[in-house]
Image 1 (cartoon, rainbow, N blue to C red):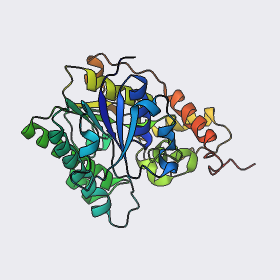
Image 2 (image 1 turned 90 degrees about the horizontal axis):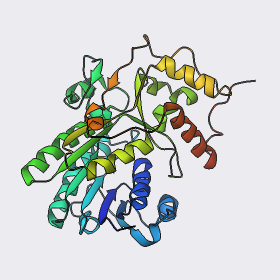
Image 3 (image 1 turned 45 degrees about the vertical axis):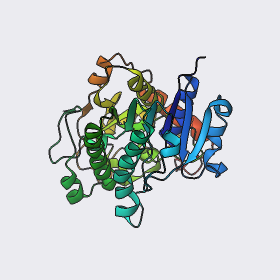
Image 4 (image 1 turned 120 degrees about the horizontal axis):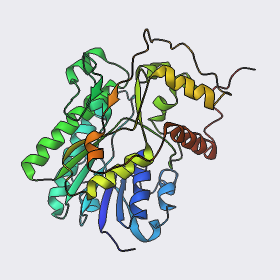
Length: 332
């Protein structure tokens, strides 16, 4: 397989970053992966064990808050996939542990891209929470819609600091990129679901498995909810990096479902778990809201996986990693 050149993946040990790294290695890229601590084998073993890693994967230490810490990893790269983002919603200091690193991190990364002089395109992993957090819900969202950050701060819905920070970070990234001549693409996934490589439970599974684990605060996000399979999301990242006509923002979402329909699907697939029929904190089951992937599909991208595939993948990964037992079983 011909070497396609070197690319950098930030946050490579995480849910999306590790799967994306695997795909890039499979497709012939050399990957310079940034993690918080390359020496922590518990956090990076799943990367080192990937096929092709011995020949074409190099790990680098980088911190979103430290300007210049991405310089070495990005040096010589033709592309950068900025996946890294703080996700600790329980942080004691939300401003300095989540919001500032998210916003400052993307600027620090883009400054490193300028220094490298070799980066053709940057693909930034955003979130659906940059699109739809607004006082009035729409039935369909596309890339022209932006979250109202003041609304986020006022209402303080579940995960609001993450939505707030990612919205400001994405806008800041596009402004900086335009001023400095950087080709920037943002990928906007809905709730990412499916199998995973990392050894611990991915943060987005708090939402995907909320009806199974009875994680009531996350019912808000499921009413209604949109999903994308992790594999489809990572394929979209590479597709948009390689497509010459790609430009701007791209929603990446394949399935829209109400909380009631999701509960029915899970109840049928996993009868051993007690899936609620009524949803605490939810006064009204809202109709489906669509996140349109038309712009992405118009470029020729095709989604491969079903919602059932996503949950099959999650459960298989959980079983392999011993993460299933803590889930509350139906009482006999």
